[in-house]
Image (cartoon, rainbow, N blue to C red):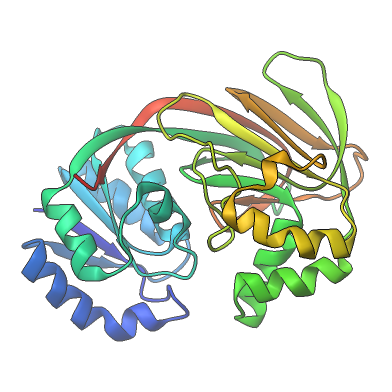
Length: 299
């Protein structure tokens, strides 16, 4: 039987409130399943790992990008070739946008029933957690540092939209100085407002940060947004949502299989964002793992 891992706290807690209706729609348009509910951060990964080891063939993540990322981590860490399904019920919805999975439960359930399976690339990042210990995480969407970490923290703390948080953060944001090594090239110093390591196209609640990214090309899209003034940052925001920002002179774009990033000032703390969560800080090393995960997508 398929397993659905439900994060009742996603979408500001509304997933738990509307779960009976989600479950009814899922049974009607997909079929039978077993539901498991998370109780705290990290629980989805543990539940997915256990379900995979017990023989589940399809594990469906019901929640936002953080829940999907955790379930993917659980599957990948299990060592089992288990398929990931997506039942959107969260705030951002960035990964399901790249997969072109509809946001409505009934339509997404039909994709789970009749969709096709594709193998997608996955990112693996090694970094320092909040206690300074070495940590590793898989990611399916986008990882970043710079302004995005402040935007996410503010949105979580104040329970506001990503767009509102970006406006508030832009007024106070200062650029970060980084040292970056792409593949085996020489290190170079960058001053950026934000730097993204993208496996998928979207992050930040609908920003098409990496419009050319492909989940099956075996490469990251590295997108750097340079030192922009507050006014230029705000007036350029629509271009980022539409994905037309790569032509801006302040924006850099490269393809890579591996990238290492650290703060130029070794004493500085630069936070790291991974699939919409904030697990730690730089230095970080990113590696693409081609075709590492099976995912159910629209037929």
